[in-house]
Image (tube, rainbow, N blue to C red; front, side, top):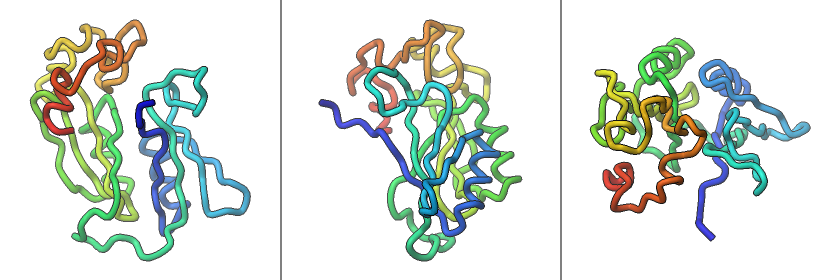
Length: 182
């Protein structure tokens, strides 16, 4: 069995603040578990639902009450960060700043990967935005032969609904993301 990532968790000093932030920015849906300081996160259509009968390309997660102080500004990352496939890195980057995020790495093009940016959410957690569409309009997935012209910039599927990275059985040698150490 492959050791796939199937869930993520975001730690929040003020949970409602991050529920509002991610709901507004990415359209995620949150559901609190009773009176617990824990919320499930539904990231949207196409995400896995922890069921072998339902295929998906993204994962869902949770938001939990932080058990200590938020990361201090300028401190190193303590834990993992997540990167979200989006259609418009620059537009969502600007929206995130308006919603209270802080720039970590400005949007930039990475040949062989796509357009990428990193932010700190209002509680200091690092997260990234990634699109296969470069700033000059080149779709990196199409340019690398991993998708056809109709592929969405969010890296998630071909026009036939298949994930090009899975459908093509790419190995570390042929996957440009793996080859670039991502």
